[in-house]
Image (cartoon, rainbow over all chains, first blue to last red; front, side, top):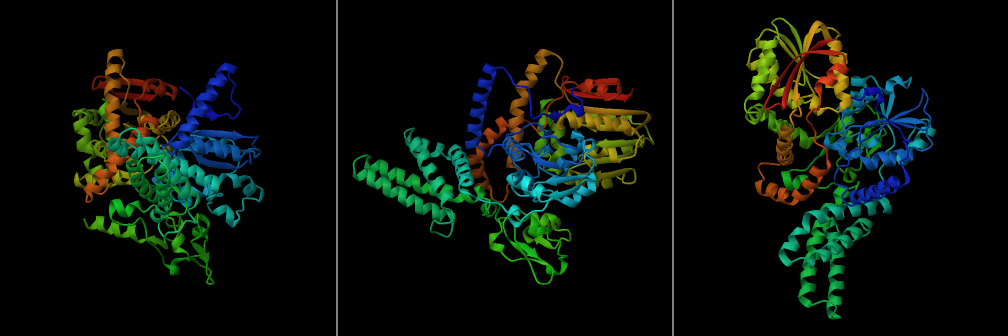
Length: 376
Length: 248
């Protein structure tokens, strides 16, 4: 039995012997490689308290979820900052997804504040939440249920040191998500891994094993091209954009066939697979981006995820919606209120709906379905 | 009984939860609840941690106890509220949305019984120890803790059989849970979705630790948190354990 207070993850853990270290590093590298490709799968680490640097009684207390990659990256971003990091139980998923899924909730915060006993280590009662959990954790509810004041820190962990240096003030850039090329590459690999796992079986069953490496390569080309070219490729929808790339792949296959490097029947079959792959990548890509709605709800449930309605009379100008919006949907008006000025940018995270203290921002779809349920 | 793990699948559909659980535990869950309700004396004050759909709370209230039932799931509490009204015990049962980590907010030494069924197995070790410590502080002098949970059976042969049964049941539970929430109106789309997602679901299933696990040793936990064990009973081949304990 471990007493609750002993549950402290120490950043400077004991170093194992050289042989064990090598084996450990090899296993670690393999595991990381696996989770780079299959990032859609959760990867839990034990929840607990991480002491970073040499935190004192006034050190900031930050929160993240128990996803291995998240913990690793947040810890790295916090190097050189004296603080406590609470790794909250959230099913081993990243902050944004876990909060949207309900696994990273106020209950997680309640649990980690209690089990970590961080209250005995600091004199203040202020906890900094990652901004991207705003789609699942209402900051007023945290205050009401734990007595700790919750504030939303920056959207990205890399901005935390600068945010703390500025006296817990965020610039507007710190409130918004980014989608840089390295980030797109990561997402392209994750999308490739998950699509490969799901769909390679179908062409393989139809045509035999030889087609699998071709299909995987075509998917890789499509995933990379659509992710990196998401803003520049022609086309209105992502299926169209992926289609443009598929046409280029088909042309390359045609050229290879005309040079005799490929049989005509193989070229035709692979062209068909390219178009199938374009459909898959085009449909999946928005879900692997921080900017676009995935749109699956409409396909599988028959209605969209959300339709936001902002009733301006109720707005008290608290700025929360503008602060937690990871894109750039809200802007101040000249009447000291905030308005939904860029509804097209909305990627459907619902953070504004959940945070709005006066319930001025309403998801009309949810309201409609609630009414339907109540009516029977 | 490994079937206890299947209850996860029914937590999302509270209305069906009780019937399914009854079936899966071969009626033993009802027997266990009756046993707990019988031990709760009339006019006593009871705290039911993780009351779920309120079946146990209603039984205890019918025996004359005044029950405070707490749970984190609002849909389960909705079912419990309807049940309490339907069984005409509304004046003796209070229901609140409160997590097991928040019972320290309730008055100290204010309950004659603290009851908790199938809750500890869903908590982490740290959470379970916090809950037990707080539960002991909520007990009035002479008060009793009644916990029932899924446990690893003591004999080796039973442990093996148990492990062999639990895995497929966990898998089935996981898949049933995944299928829930999909629209019943779009059956074809749902079937297609399921066929396509199956490999990824299996991957996730293999890598993610189960949301509940059988407890290795409730009794050691209880002693570590200041309890003295006064009674132990097993159900379902030693896989469901009911422990009665008082403050040491």
